[in-house]
Image (cartoon, rainbow, N blue to C red; front, top):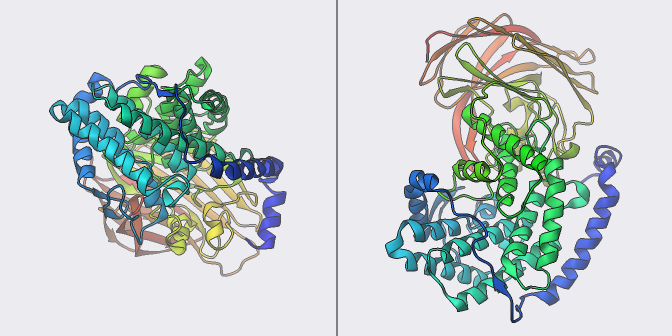
Length: 574
């Protein structure tokens, strides 16, 4: 990272974390040097694995999802991944080549081990086969990827989630009635290897904590709860319990959303704390914060999961496939935190900066809020004053999402750019900037940008984005009986001839009929009319990523103007 950026970061939002970051870096260096002498761990006599720690899914959950779990288990047994640009892979094989590192990271979590364990309950006639398969895959993994060696140990988050999956899967498998004393002993050693690794490498980063650190703590907590008699187990459990309670308040904002500026990461952070609630006792106040986060998950899922920020689809646990199914999250939360409110549909989430409206047949989201991660903006996009619209359950105007992290820097920056989001800005500038190169792929500083909400009522939404360069955008949306009316205005007195665009990224299925001041948008469920008062409208192809690692070709409307009044009206009912 170049010196001007380092100085800006040092004197900007990261300054409060610097001393703690130095402390944590020293701690990690010492612990990692000791780790080499500890691995592999040989457990002493008297050490055992507890059982019955993590409750099995409820009977109602089994009734609804058993077929999907069994299908996932069967596919992974055959090595059929078909996700994250990976078609086939089995434990013990070389890591998939020519894919984003995030794809390997996901496979490294071994979610399917829990599916094997549940299959031993669902498919009772083949119980021994499923349990033996579980053990053989774990043993193969540890033989081909010993602790601290290879890509599967490079990411403490992945190591921790794999540790949690392994211990929960082993617990569930043993509760089917299957047992293998020799395998139990191996499992204790494998779990202790994982725990020692995660404790040494944990990603607290001076208090600049994210979902990574929360996941680290979940794995450490699982090891402390399950391993009985190990000299470090009690300290692991104490560390994780203490830190998870702190991180819950830091990472889940008062409005219930996660501090990542991403709906996808909100889902992941929430699941981490929900799964932790099966292993530890949170205070009533903490349980209410978790419950509020769960209700936010239900809300954003109900409106079609707008892809605000990086649309990473990770979860702490995936039992029925690689898609982010939240049914198990809801199942656990209802039993550990309390009943979930399923009625709320309109919502203002001020700390996250998201407004959700159901109006005139549309479901609308409006974004004006912080970049998250305490100002680092690692998973944020340049999406201030952006809008998404769906109608009749089908997306119309969308946030195009995220297809990659590090495999293609240009593509990632295009997908984070203001030019890919449904807002208004200059074609030669960004709302928030990032360092150049690979080091900047997980930075987005908001220190030069000021956000203001002028109004946010049932009748009107008015947000302003102001940049230190003098650029500013005012978006005022009025909710009228038959749709929405918007007035967009861009100002930058110092720049003559600067091109400015209002952008409308469209969902893949939307058809467009374009006239000089009107566009007819046809989705699978409705026909909508977009009109505008000034400017030149054009249409061009754009790539969208409805899920991480998969892109689709879609269309984008671009209206070149600095001041415009535009409307969106539903012509046919969904």
